[in-house]
Length: 271
Image 1 (cartoon, rainbow, N blue to C red):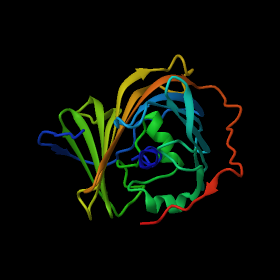
Image 2 (image 1 turned 135 degrees about the vertical axis):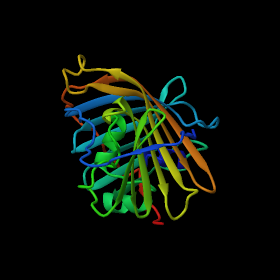
Image 3 (image 1 turned 90 degrees about the vertical axis):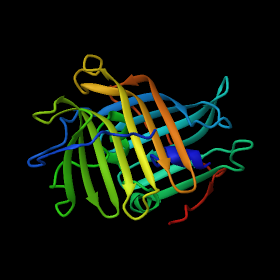
């Protein structure tokens, strides 16, 4: 079950050349897309030979809701998990799967508690930004957390925005249209590490960006077709690769989610 929570919680190594530090005044996040709805289907690889290929379907309304379903692809698609995320609550149901999950269970978690469980900032905005290729955390502007330490550097022709805010160090790497003028382009890599335990680290890579402005009627300029999420601790590591196979941008009629009496409620332990 642990790989499933790694995927839900958004939980590869990169070496960069010596960075050139540049001023960090008056910076802001890249131009945001103007989307309202997004529907996508992803092929999911957990890089675990004991887990079959998975298919993830998501439906999102901006700043409002994320619905998802996860199925195992074994010739036919077998439902594995489903969930719905609102601004204040996360609900996840996991189906009974032989040799994987001994029973059908569900979790209902306040977002405030999920923030304590997950090793990275976790909320509806972060989850939506993950799929649309926006920074998970604003590492560019002091307006978000004025007391944090901010830094901007150029490394291997990538802009690297860093913020240090206890207990995390968060780095966002962007491709640039112009290194000299620090013009943003596409988010390439996010690194999140712990200042307390440096062996704990999560990275998110966005790549294979595609211009979808025509298909989305201008709601998006571009979308990442592939994501790689890696989480590492002193004890273990997990990697999830997602490849976007289909996408829609029109209004979403429903977000079906129901838990019947066959599911047993469980509580996630806090750290």
